[in-house]
Image 1 (cartoon, rainbow, N blue to C red):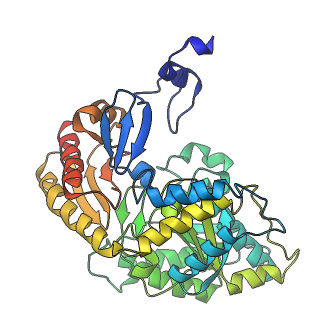
Image 2: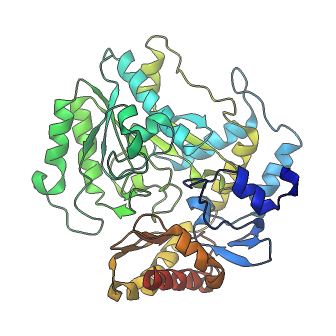
Image 3: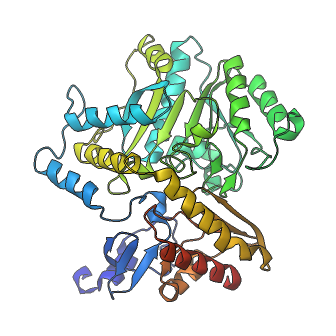
Length: 431
């Protein structure tokens, strides 16, 4: 009988967690509550959430303003379909998004999650090209080491060899891959196309111009693909090349949006704007699943002028009012403060406190950008082994691949951040 099992026994026997082996699920902690930067376990152990719960909890857990907005909305309108209906939360959030996102992106499509926002962006690109008379343009180009989500089409533009979804390669759409941008963030830019990656990109895009609908990539920061930071000038040049060849440009800012890189959007580190942008994670401050895909009038009206004219996507929970008010509250919190100074302070402190890791054996690199701190090892790091040290460290860290990293909540204090970086240094020495 399942009711005879303890909560954790039931969990390990019946609940499937992300990226786990059900026969060897690894250490799992039962969380009973969370507030601010802390999660509290069932034995009252308090851990600093150095992951911002997979990069979304920028204002901390159980933020008073966000939870109040959700509670108030819950008593009036928890949900209503968005087909043929609308509501103030969706409209108010839309106004806020247009205030802060790139100026040319004027059309907003609300989604359930980050992966779905990528699916929507890719469908937009294909339907636009079809409407423009280019029915053959249904494939995508991207850079290697990228990650865009776990749903089917999104998987096809994740790294085909080393990414989490490489085992599905034979079942996925074949896409066009180029090397990741070779010039790192902070290095001097080279105009020599064989050195900056643009020669290879031009070759691939020109060869596939009749097949490629859009070029999709994570701007400046590749997240799950390796926490790699590259030069923004690459994106400026990509924009010109895409325009020349009639290929749309999609920025996946799910992880980089809302101040994480030190700019409000990684797009702001460039001099250009994409045709489509995907936003998620921090959108609701991590309080409820939500995402959005924004595009410009050219794409939206192009789709509208084609056949069948309507955009072929419509999630059941599209524009959920609870998610909309949570997002509006989260964005008001962000823009109502000097978020840039706060992120800069986190960045400076991480630079100083992670620097000693450069002298550790088996450390390949240490890098910081905005509120992202990374210790890259020369070997694969076990998340399970890191979990075994979590209680002693007082910090929840979940390494992946070769990276021990943190994306701390923006409200993290100096002392709390020092505890996070100290934990990272210890893991770098022990794992």
